[in-house]
Figure 1 (cartoon, rainbow, N blue to C red):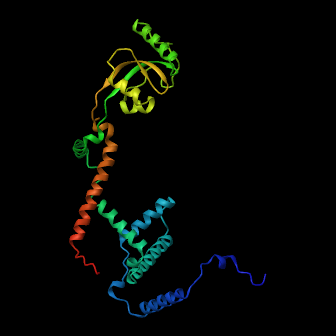
Figure 2: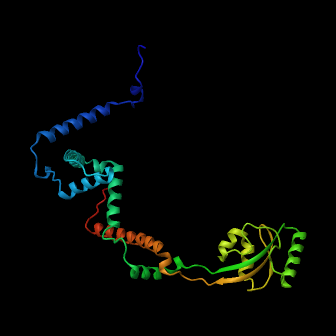
Figure 3: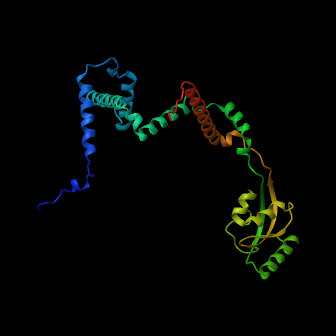
Length: 277
């Protein structure tokens, strides 16, 4: 149809006069760079370690070593990227573009964080670090209990629970007593916080204060319970062997933060900051 505009033209953003001026400036600058003789810093050296890294990256991706032609192509791509980076820096694009500035700063932070950071400092260092941060790994006390459950919240359910308690106090075994409960008649020992998440805060407080080995009544968000606390584990820090992976991860986070702070402080000491107002 006459006068119709192709789709790709419609998708293209409008171009103002500044675009042409910018392109013209880039072209003139490029001609200047091409016309002048190469300087000493225009030499691009592809070190053996770089070639080896390119070869290993190809092997990891393709599962085989690269051919000579493939390796040469990768080296050419690397050289092209190096040249473009140098020219972009020469134009000040690394300083003018906020995204590039953020990426460079982030890359430098990563380098400072990982400077001389070992993969694993060994058990002695981790054990000393764990002891300095003992509160982080301290396990709270836990209590375990047997229970007979009665569904319902009214007086009738409470009276039924009291009757079951009387039978239990007379020595009758709790097997087949009460109503079914998903958590079972003898849940594993748990902390007060974990019990509260399952049964409610009021029930958890009763369990925490209950005397050992005595059947008592407790009310939860499900109904009435006749419980007997029969297991107790004191709060303690677990041995390193049980939590080593977590301690190592926390140690690395702490070491990265320390290295970053120290590295930035060293770098700042090398500069004199002048702010123009």
